[in-house]
Length: 404
Figure 1 (cartoon, rainbow, N blue to C red):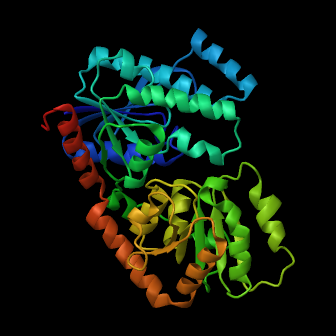
Figure 2 (figure 1 turned 120 degrees about the horizontal axis):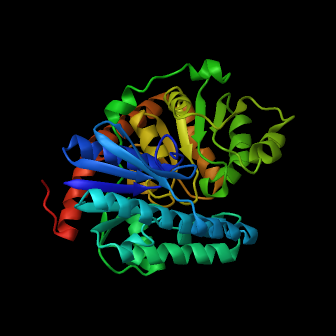
Figure 3 (figure 1 turned 120 degrees about the vertical axis):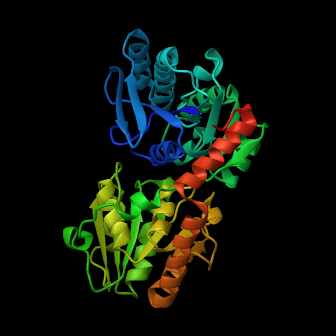
C-alpha cells in the first residue's frame, strides 16, 4: 500500500508532542512492513513542498504563505490562538496533500483530529481518509487558560474536519467513549493503542544524567517529565513533594517546559526553608536524549495527569522498566493495571499519590517486580510493528482496501 500520514507535529523540526511521537513510530513501522510511506508534516517557516528521507520513508514539509495566512494572523488580536493554529494547519495540509496527489495515488491517508489537518481535505479531496483521535480540543481546552470563544471556535473547526473523514480510530477505549458521548460521533471507532519501537528505544545513546543534572547517586530518584501545566497535574506536586520529602530521603526531578513559571513561583518557594530529608531538582526543558537518560536512570516515574489518552511518557517509562505511579484518569488504567505493572492513584488527590509513592520508596522488590512487568506489557501489546499491522487491518476493513 501507499500510505500518507499527515501530522503537523513530526521530529525534529516540529516534533514537540505525543502526536509527533506517534507519527514517527507509526511511519517507521509501516515502512518496516513493506508499505510505501509518505509523511506530510508542518514547517516552522514558510516553505514550498520539500522532502527528506529516513528509515525507508519520505517526509514532506510544507507551510503556505500568501494572503490567507496573512489574514489568519489577525486572530492573534482577539487571542484566538488555538483556532488560528487549526485554520492555518487545515489550509496548509490541504495545499500540501493536493500537490502530493498530483504525483502519487494514495491508498489511505491517516491524520489526527487535534490540529484539524483534515479541515478541507475531508470535504474537498476525494481521498480515503482515517482520523485517529488523540486529544480533541473540546475535551482538553477547559484545563488551559484560554478564552471561551477560542475554545468554542477551535472545537468547531476540529469537528468540521472530523465529520468528513472516511473512518475513525482511537488510541484508547476511554477516548473513543468520550468522543461518542461528548462530541456526538456515532460511527464505529476502532481502538488501536500507540506503539513504540523497542529496538530503537533500547539502543538510544545515553548520557550520565545524574552527573549532568546534579542528581544524587545514593538515593531513589522520582522522575516527572511533561509540560508544567494543570492538565498534567503539576498543581498537585507541591503537596506531594512536601509530604514525601518530610519523611523520605529521596530526590524529585522535574523535566519539561514551564511556560507559566510554576516551579519558581509555586513549587520551589513552598519547599524553601523547610526541614526536608530529600530534595527537588528542576531540570528545565530537555532534549529527547536527556529525557530518555533521566528516565532510565531514575527509580520511579509518576504521572499525576487530570486527562490523558495513551501517553508516550507512560509507554516509554514502561519500556524502560520503571516502577510507575499513574493517575486513574483517561486511558492510563488501560496501560497500567494496579498492582500488576504499576500502581494507580486517584486523579486530583495528592495524598493518593503520596501513599502509592511511599509504597515504592519503601519496597525495592515491589519496584523491581512492577518495572519488569511493565516492560513485558510493552513487549506483548505495544510494539510499533504490531500496532502498525493492526492499523492496516482496521483501515482495510473500514475503507475496503487491499493489504498488499
